[in-house]
Length: 308
Image 1 (cartoon, rainbow, N blue to C red):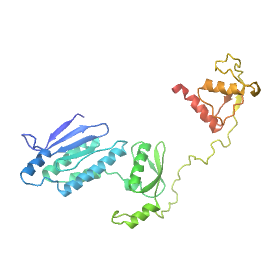
Image 2: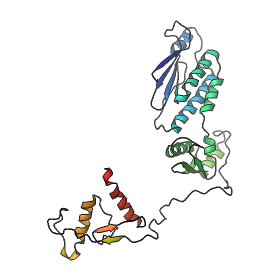
Image 3: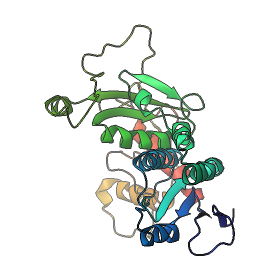
Image 4: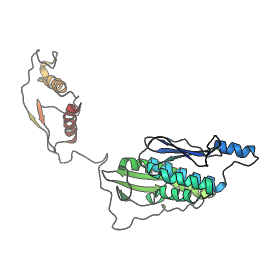
């Protein structure tokens, strides 16, 4: 999409004409209503160029919904926009650029703000439903469309704005969440009802319904990943232990049965420092899927060396 300019006033077009400029960015399109010359003309004629209150409210509603939609789709940057007598700027997802232009045209020429409200409703996201109480799984393609990690990042921001604690985890095709309300936030909302009109506490005292799937356990610090693991098997390869070994180790204690050479030779051969928690009993360690977790992690690091 190249830059487009759409004139709202009939020709001839000059600096006093109102125009809509569309500029494409990577994640969205900037829809700019330039009415600066039109506002200056009204001022010179002794009229008030300020936007009507219903017009400004509709614009704010669209701006909030459109920026949320772009962040929801994975955009990580920030926005800058303005709303005033001279300029109106939207950051709009590409599928909604044409409806935004038509909504601005109807608002400017016909004082019809219904299309702006309809556009805001179309862009609005069900954030209140996503942050409703209870442990549940949101499925990609059913409850949301972006990648799970991007969606969870967006939900964390919205939960923080609402004062909600979000216990969430992203999987390959879904997001597990459990929104809760802290005692401090509950007290703040109850003590200042004028700041939170219409606020209803849906989280305190919430009980989980029977038959709801439980979040699968993925482990944690208290889980032993080496439980019931089989010991690693060692095999002797008989590496060179004279001063001409290519690993470069020449100083060694004769009383350690060449163990220092084995460790140094392994680090030199693998290209990865062997964890000190592992006891290397011989030259070659055979690691399987049933080996302790530390050995499996070391094998994983060695297996990824060719990618470098």
